Length: 308
Image (cartoon, rainbow, N blue to C red; front, side, top):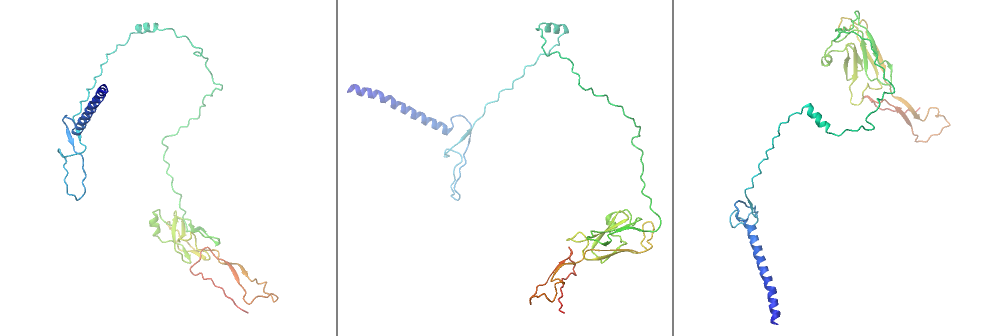
């Protein structure tokens, strides 16, 4: 029994000593990490948030600060740059020394594909043909192009459009044989009077296409042409004078008409109105009318029923 107790004593005594030593080592390590060791440096305090309105002041530095602290210390110096070893200047070899070095090399045996016959093309390209040499001065001489001579004499209307019964009238054009306006800006031309009149009067814009042709465009947000179901008359009065002094001897007039309202279908037909035909006391009367694409302000649908 005594021998058994001595064996137990020898077993747990070293274990207790080892546990005590391990505990002391852990405690020392914790203290070292908390205080940052004995090396000099700077302590960066951690930021501590306090509840708003508590009025408590938490110390930032000193022994009362608890939590994580960071210590900065001086770093190690960077290694010195390595100086490159200077290269010794070379001396070119003489031709005899180069030959002696090459003579020490083994001979290079020729390969099977080192020598080949010269391959000529299947079709020989003919030489370029010589062309004709043209001698022209450069730069070429200046050739001033003069304007066409203006015809002298009375003013005439060469052509106008549209005319007669037409399905659509996009614009009105009148061309004279002599210049009617000077060469100037469109703004200046818009302020000048035009020698053409249209009946009935329409809102629109007169434009000069060059100096001899006058163009009229109807102004509307709905259509890009002249109104339908209308008879137009265009007049160029006598005495109209051109820029060269020519005078129109007689008044020029032309007219054109756009499509009007037409009856397409009606019921009952005229040939069906016979004595043998019986109709109810409440007959139905219908009529289909094709009206123009544009309805003027005076348009009023009217239907009259007469008994005889």
